[in-house]
Image (tube, rainbow, N blue to C red; front, side, top):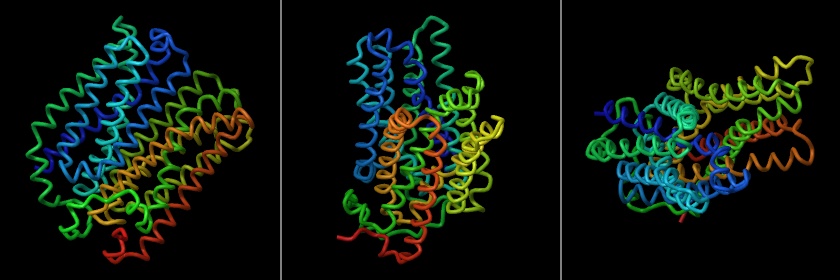
Length: 407
């Protein structure tokens, strides 16, 4: 039963990664067909990000009322409808309109699935699941490329991914009874998180109360720092290598993509040791490795080999951080608080991913793109310091009553 549902969740993570790269991959063509400037991609991503933040914050209330299975199925259905809506759009305002249900669905399913896995499955599965998300995110540019070269246009790519999401929605609806059965049991390899009193289960945790739980503030800053670092590296690495290192654009693009492949491959490898090492060490070693990689990029050496290798090492360091922070949430804050706090963490993640790349763009325009590795190193240090602060706070409040929000 656990294995059957876990298989569905693995497929869901691959499918959820598919749409995430479509806008970036297709926008050079889309903006021309829609008759808008290239910079309007930022408007679309901001609409999507706003929806994801709102639905992440509402995930605790939704999941408590409807269950993780139904929230996941409904959210994937919203995403499928939005993607098909994209494929039928011929005006920019239509793209923005469909971006609303896309963002709402993406945020809700992200928070619900991550919390469900954190509660019911071991740390290795959390790493492997996020590795599978990377597989989906890596495949979607190829789907867009095939659609463009085969004459289907960018709408064909959205239609293909939308239909895949429709199939996943049907599969999720069919497995709803299985979700409910697993909810009442404990997986044989689940994390050792003590059960919480059932009296609190029916009361959603408000944002204000969640923020007053000891340790929530530092974990939000750590999560913000990590997602800001990851997205900034993905957006600006190639530009830095070309403008500051005079690396050939094709080589720079290849190594920039290796950063994402390092994240995906690193999560797969981390899954084999996650249960033995534990979430805390994975986070600590992850941020430390990222810092090592970014310092290698920063070194003013006569060769570019060290800088290129540093970018790959930074990707490998990023790999276990996101899954480990999510998986450790029930242990740090209690099972009854985990859905609300994971929702807030997702919101912090989306804020970091949305704001950091344009923030660095402003910094680089005023100071120079040479600040790229400095910017990443500062974020890695901030994430490491805040994650260590979280550990200290949690260790001081190990009693169950201390992990609940104050009235």
